[in-house]
Length: 312
Image 1 (cartoon, rainbow, N blue to C red):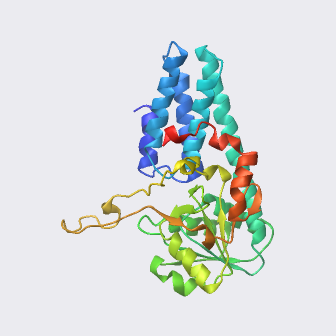
Image 2 (cartoon, rainbow, N blue to C red):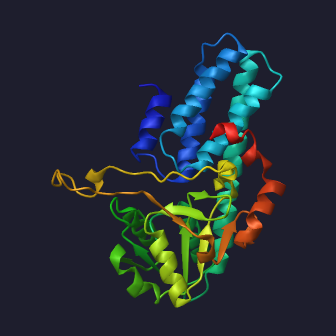
Image 3 (tube, rainbow, N blue to C red):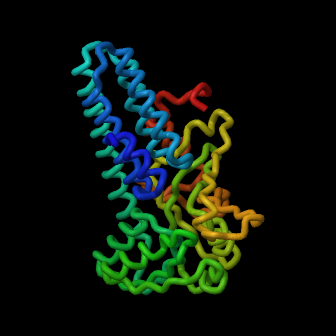
């Protein structure tokens, strides 16, 4: 199996998970396609890149960081003046590395900004697993702050176990709760800190299923909720009326061998209304939901590069 197909398979099966790791793997797979291409002309090369992009797009519907990155790279190759195949290969490689550097730098800054929000003695509530949120906890720990975390198990794939294990390794006290016990524990927290997989044009955010319950619970008891997200997770296609597809996972994840007449609904994500978020913690700082789009349009035009009504 070649690298492209293997990467697509691994993303779809959640062998590769997490927005940063998925974008990284997809960019490297696209670079591999360019590097190994047998194309003789620019149009042939672009066709190969477009096919690879479409294959990777189809793996997970809620991965704008990957989609924005791949769209930018392919659009650059398509609109460049280069006709030589080797020049196009270099362009794909350089563009890919440039985006990855942006992603890595953003992740580091978000972790620092979010870590600064955590104060001595706090209890922080989190849901599922976000490497960016873990970075925030790690940064706060490096500042000498003593705090604890409550995390959910995050059924049905139990990503909360990854969160718990990583926090134990860091040396942060952590308590895991079952998902259905959120309301009893969230009132014990001083803040909620979650990641995001996607930001829509109206600044709602999409995250692991169960996040909406956490957000409503936090709002009810007056606990602030901060969303740690790279601005590149904004989905520009929602500007053109696209409704974000919520991935439906296999029923086997919930109950393998369930009765045949039983219908099992297993969505991977929730759409959380922006009014439930206190603020978004981004690489540009702590932003109110209503100011996000202005910052994206001013400083992150690469995110929307190549996006149009035709792309949805």
